[in-house]
Length: 228
Image 1 (cartoon, rainbow, N blue to C red):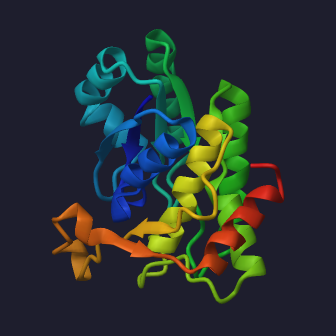
Image 2 (tube, rainbow, N blue to C red):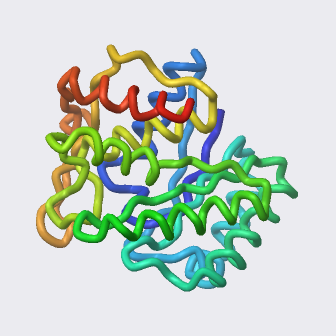
C-alpha cells in the first residue's frame, strides 16, 4: 500500500504518517509506504495554489492507494475554501484511481465546543464528495470525555502529544484498512519539539516511546464506541 498525506503540522507532528504506515503494515501484513506534503500552518487552498504542481504530480503519477488530506484547524479556515480545494484534490484522486480520505481534526484544548462545527463540516464534505472520513476529532472527543487523565495535547493545547498522534494514526489505520493493531502495539513516536518546533529528534529510532497499557485500551474502547 502507498499513502499520500497532504496537510500541515497536525499531520507531520511526531512523524504521525510514519506511525500510521507502521500500523497499516502490521494489520495488512504487507509494506505500507507513506509520503507527506505537509507544511506548517498551510491550508488546502495554499497546497492547491502555492504547491499545486507538487500535489498534482504526486497524485497523478505517484501510484498512491490513498490520499489523506488535512485542513487548517486552529482556527478553522473559510468553509467554502475547504470545499473547493478538497474537491479539486478529490478530482485528481479520481483520475488517478486513488481513494481520497478526509482527515477530521480535533478542537483546541481551550475550545472543545469547536468540535461540533469541525465534525459537521467534515461529515458534510464526505457526504458531498463520497470521500472516506477518518473521524479523528470525534474519537479524540470521546477519549477526552471518558479519560480525563490522558493527555492528548502537546504543551500548546493545539497540536497532538505522542499519545494524541498514536490515536490519530490508529483512526487512520482503521479508516484505510477496516482493522486496528492489537493492544500489544504500544510504541508511539515523540520527536520532542522545543519552542517553535526546533530542534526535533533527527534519528528516527530516538523517537520511540512506550505508552501505558491503559492508554492503549482506552483508545480501542473509543474506537469501538462507533465501530471505527
